[in-house]
Length: 528
Ligand code: G4P
Figure 1 (cartoon, rainbow, N blue to C red):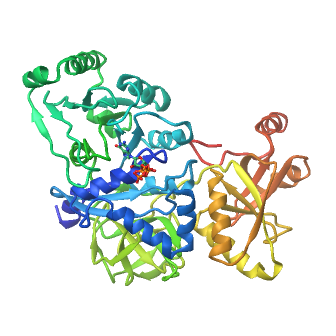
Figure 2 (cartoon, rainbow, N blue to C red):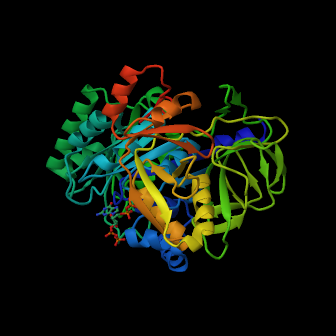
């Protein structure tokens, strides 16, 4: 083994996914606390967040809505590993952005609020993990306060996302009267001790079963009975099923009070896969020790007004990345200098000198680089593009002040490149009134806000009647255009999309005129 594969084996690259308010931010902070990356005590990451919202318009929207819109990458050492935590935007509705972040991760942690379980608005997010066969760990959070029954929550995970939960720990005491957890691997009881808002690591008192039975009485007996039940239903960890995304090791705890955080983090190191060879477009894995390669999964512009730039986030797939190396940009075949490579920790940037498979590098001012592009050195490789979702929401955008049309056009182009929304144009109307297409309506708010605040082009977004899109071609477009309730628009990559007002109308048309080209937009998963 050479350095890249040795380093790759130490990498754990994952994303935390959750419904807003389930505790993703809190858990992230606690991971950093346990990883020793939080020097200012718990809350430092949040404080960092507040500061950045104060200095940037872009963050203002985040502040107003109390959600996190931009993804950040946090890297910290834990035990003998390097953990890369990719932050997914905490939208209530699913967005493409989240999907792209997942494409760069090797595993995910799903955080559920013990009182709420799986919330319908975020169901799609969890389904995506399942569809991508992504190893998923589950953390049932907020057990320190009243919530639902543990067995009922397990049932819900299984029935709603079709992933079988395999509890690694099991709670003693009901939600709200939390005594601790049983570690099912050892049978020991780990007692929960409240810490003052979790500013320090939680003390973990490990007690053997005999003593726990005496000290915890009825709560212990109930937990034992439930565990027996789990054993008979076969809810035990199975590595193969976990790696295939079919079974999820499940943990109970309370991120706020730090309880259960270490067990979860240890499991991430012990159970979740290291960075492994990624397949190219031909399905051939690029060996970890091959020369450098990686793909861009996110492009963010103007994250910080003071910088006014554009960062392409690249996941390293093979070899060793060294800042300053000149690589090839797969799409254009042009050389690309990596002089301005950063590690982006939250909003703070640090120059990065080296990176290995699993790591994320932020390339500043990577003007020509788009989401999905491959960068490589020495031996050519192309990684598959990240599929885009079939949009389900469509709005027409018009600039309010025609004097700002240039800014509007520039803004629209930028948002399209970043994939904030997909931009569709009527060949006859051109850039005057593009149709913005999105998977979740939240994407429109972001687009509108950014056009106004970043590009100085206030816009009016008006709804359209369309709700379904299909890929079509030149041959079918004339016939489709002549129909009522259908429009054919072009995406920047040249793809023609036929938009329909209803799926019923589409189904009927496909039945009546099978010769028309009308294909789902995404092959496979979650095609609209
Ligand atoms: P998010 O990123 O998923 O949106 O959730 P976040 O961590 O911001 O947590 C949402 C709220 O839930 C926060 O309360 C947080 O303190 C609380 N919380 C997180 N984990 C736990 C837990 O284990 N137990 C309990 N009881 N609460 C938890 P807030 O009042 O909105 O914010 P704050 O004033 O506490 O910062």
